[in-house]
Length: 171
Image (cartoon, rainbow, N blue to C red; front, side):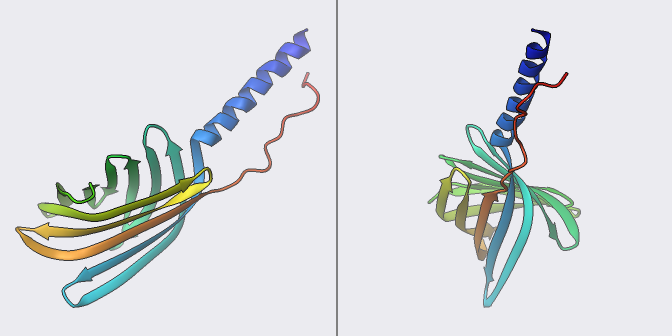
């Protein structure tokens, strides 16, 4: 009975590990960003790893480098809209609601810059192993359009094939 109890505890611990992997998946991430300002068009891309948490909202977290500064990025996806939160040397909390204006503050070492975000479209495709999010928006400062932006993130769960239950109990 004692060995069976130890085995049951171990199975519960392993099941908790499996549940944690399900709720917070490690993911491969690819981002693409297109920035159109006046007559200039720039494209940026990033391949990295991060995490994906499924709760009432989906949370995707990763790090990127902007102008030599490491920035922690959280993408929060809800049915009501999307937020891209950047924390680090650069702080920016973009809130996207399709067809609407939202207000944000762009924080840099020199101070805070108020910006209006107009969201043209949000497309989100998701399945059990990952998904793709596309956001098309404009940034406006003092009623002047600064540019048109496209943000795309593709995330895919990294599979874990090494997690198996033992066939005999440990003593």
